Amino acid sequence: MHSEPSIGPTEIWQLTETVWSAILNLDLAEGAAETSHRSGIRVMTSCVQITGAWDGAVVVRCTEDLAKRCASAMFSTDSTTPAEVRDALGEIVNMIGGNVKSLLPGPSKLSLPAIAEGIDYQMSVPGTRVMSEVSFRSQGQPMQVTVLVRVD
Image 1 (cartoon, rainbow, N blue to C red):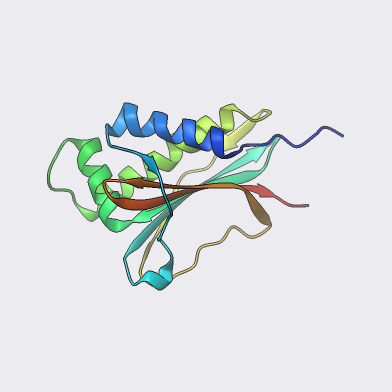
Image 2: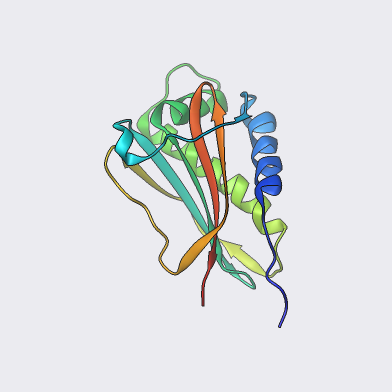
């Protein structure tokens, strides 16, 4: 039996920072994420699943305000539609997830991104556990990136 590959905080930081600097050109710093549904702030969560030789998921959770700022940066506009905000957050999790996938044994596939949003919701990927999670701040807003691994 082979050992389980590990994606730790250092890898998550590097992969996320690459997307933030190359695609969004926004600031990114370590921070405590306050993106709980209990905070009363609108939150957006995006998720992609990785299936194949390794099974798991990558989840990005941030405030709706940060998601709007990311969409504005991605589309080079001051005004974005809700659909563009969802598209941008889906593309962000897709890029981070694709970079995570490149560190794992193959072959594997990346799912289409799924987006959840609101004030009072919980999102889970049944049959997984947290492998690693990193909290960030960008544009003064909290964000979290989580890598989940399937449990047998």
